[in-house]
Length: 245
Ligand SMILES: C[S@@+](CC[C@H](N)C(=O)[O-])C[C@H]1O[C@@H](n2cnc3c(N)ncnc32)[C@H](O)[C@@H]1O
Image (cartoon, rainbow, N blue to C red):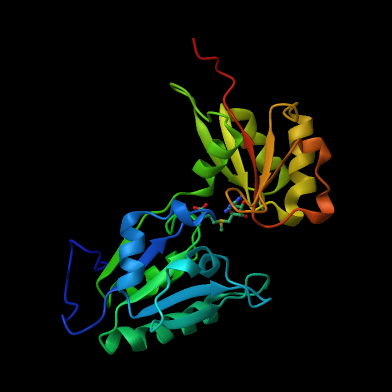
């Protein structure tokens, strides 16, 4: 049983609280007021860092950080094929030291923390030991529709979220059954996803967007995308075909 706020269990008052906060898809103005408040009140701010040493979630909130906050970069093995469990174990223990010492810890998460977010791996390791609160964020799914100016779903549409990492045959079967869909985790999976969309005759209906709401956002017709340079922060949206009256 986790110690989510509102369900406080045995966690001692003297321990710090853990916050997983969604920082949205890129535009710093898409942070919620609650996320901003939690961020600025916490003495410790942790965030995932990629192999190149960059942290997207930190860059989103950079303008909101306070001078004396302790920053804890969490080095996750984003590109490793082997188990990432030891890295999350280590990250959780690093944060547990701060929490045991009574310091509140905010963990930044791009988009929403519970929607394919890295925070989930810390949540499962720490929420039984420490009082935990999750602050939802604006997901890339919602940001994409707004940036494209294309409504995603109407009425009884069945909407599907598909990771591009799935095998082609699974993607094809699921996409064929959906009224509208989003395909995440493109990067090197783009060519496979493209082939599936082509097979289903969806290339003209689908939209491609990378780095939605960031200063370097790009929206391209799918046929013009160079598969060799598709970034990780890119997705394809297949909106509903329903025509509003
Ligand atoms: C591990 S998931 C994280 C999703 C995130 N927690 C959210 O709520 O949007 C990462 C995938 O989300 C998509 N994504 C996240 N942010 C994006 C953005 N700003 N623009 C386009 N795609 C994005 C990409 O497909 C990326 O591969």
